[in-house]
Image 1 (cartoon, rainbow, N blue to C red):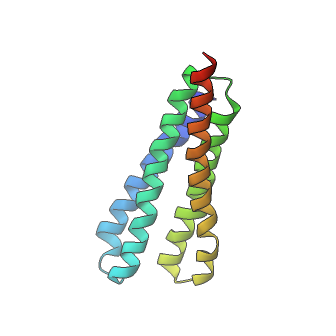
Image 2 (cartoon, rainbow, N blue to C red):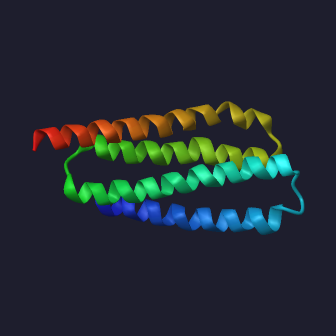
Length: 127
């Protein structure tokens, strides 16, 4: 399972860099500054959680049987899909209904980090 999260983290990091460059160079001329800022917020949180997936993968080398740490990684990936992807779609298309999903992505991010913290605390206290 560590390799799965390392791969997901690497792929998502690649996607973030590509989307960030696309936003900075390709969208700058065609989007309003507010929509570009919204788009870049999606990229920013996407990148934070791409790095989070890498961290989860590395942590799983130390605690390979921790279901909580694995759950944290899956919630980070879900958060990327529900938060960042909906922001990308909204900022590129203007479909406002997409933003109704975005808070669930934020909740996934928050829950992922909370579960990771609890899992590491439990692992540290059981050693």
